[in-house]
Length: 178
Image 1 (cartoon, rainbow, N blue to C red):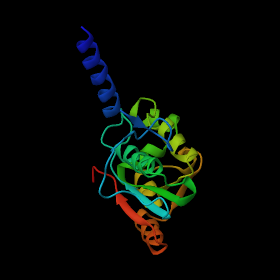
Image 2: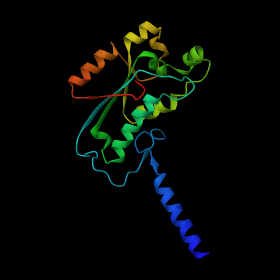
Image 3: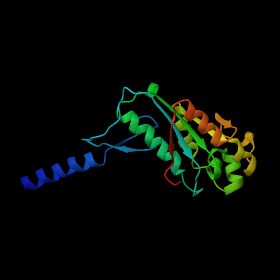
Image 4: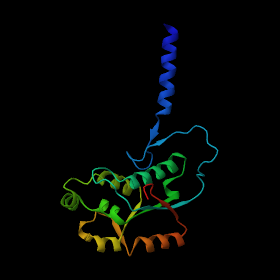
């Protein structure tokens, strides 16, 4: 009996380690797993300038995967010891992903449901991230500036925003569904 209890306790400890997840910077979103031994990690002494390029939003019923992936990238850096002061992150949304950035009233009008992205966008902005929408997408898709969420910046286009940031030393990361 004692051996079974010992085995059960060991299994419990091991499974809790495997299930570890954290959201150290973007609270509640973009969970990361602990990897005990890596050969290629993140240097916490470096300054990271990242542009997260998000253009897809395949399901209006769920949170945008590109935003979640961006939150995960930020949390990976934070979990590896990179200070938020050493991270400059800009999300650039365009194409159908732009509708992710409209307020709840406009989202309900378009999709007939609440915008599931609101808590994630707030958490991203609370982490000090700039969120930008493509002005060309806004014009083409009829998105009024008044319908945007608070603190969303408008760029001339996604292309010019990204190319300008690239000239300023930012690394471009595409969201996974592109």
